[in-house]
Image (tube, rainbow over all chains, first blue to last red; front, side, top):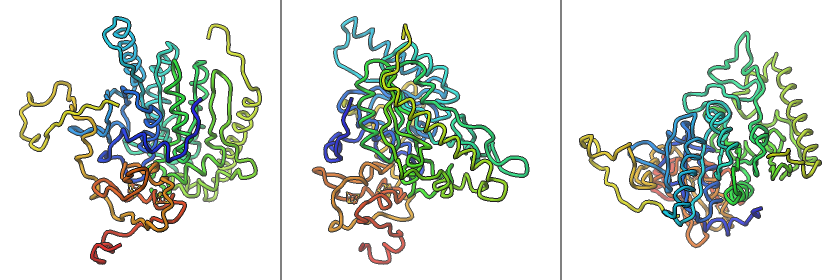
Length: 320
Length: 113
Ligand code: SF4
Ligand code: SF4
């Protein structure tokens, strides 16, 4: 397990994503990438990236913001591509054709991970490739102008979940990607957030050090799609974590560890929802039900997580 | 880290025949987006008060655009060729050492902070 180091120690790790990319001002995705790549220390990297905001904005031809070997993939196959690269590398190593070490990492947004890329991710996790998968989750297909994804919260406005006479934003709950990944019984899964960069870098470091598949699911604010102030991106993430909407936790060989418990400082989800225009319609008459359901969902999930953490070492099923 | 050190001159890329492009649209110079300036997106620029700054480095870790310049583990300024003026650094600075200043105010002050 990597320890959470002080900023003064982490700053020497250098930058592996340059400026000059064209993500929107205040985007969380590049905060995720910059800090995750610090977790790789000085290992050489091969990076794969699913179609999405991050991919289109960091690699607009003839420019790339990535300082490592980088492969662009389609929406659905980032995990397949990176596992193929990893398998080829292992083969070359066995044949004695390469001696250097190398780490493999794939990035995907929630659209490219929860939805379109989930089959290739599931396959790569199950096959046990030695790689890190990072989902930067901003809760919709922001790149194409805010369409709902499996990660979009209940009640949120997107262009495909409009609010009007019939509907008040998205009708369904979001799915739990972290739990889905954990169900593959892989050695390391963690949930993190941009506001706690020391925790994020430590988790990335643990993920890179893990032998076999590791997954990080990172909350990544999107000021355009959330209809929030760009300067408040990090603060939004902080409040979402403090409300237990986005708990920070790790699942290490099946054992759940909660990294942050706000205890008496737990805030209602309303606090941050009010600052995000995508929920604006819920604060008018008629939105009370959805607001209440959202709060109940968060409380229930938080209780479930606490119970899992109390179990301590969960027995890994046979054959895993 | 072993990024490709190759320099790739794209200044006349609009005039290139297809065969001058790398096969598979490969970009042979790693991190060359640094040659693309996004500073013009900015409406407001961050201005740091070095006396108030405690060198906690938070602004550096939070900047989405790798635009807080650090030397010897210390913040020394901003890369205004790339800073998009999002204001995260100012919002997150625990010492309130950064303020956002509109580019017009900045110009009217003769470039003084
Ligand atoms: S205003 Fe935004 S882009 Fe500019 S230095 Fe601050 S955090 Fe970085
Ligand atoms: S966040 Fe503020 S106090 Fe900390 S290094 Fe940046 S300017 Fe200085």
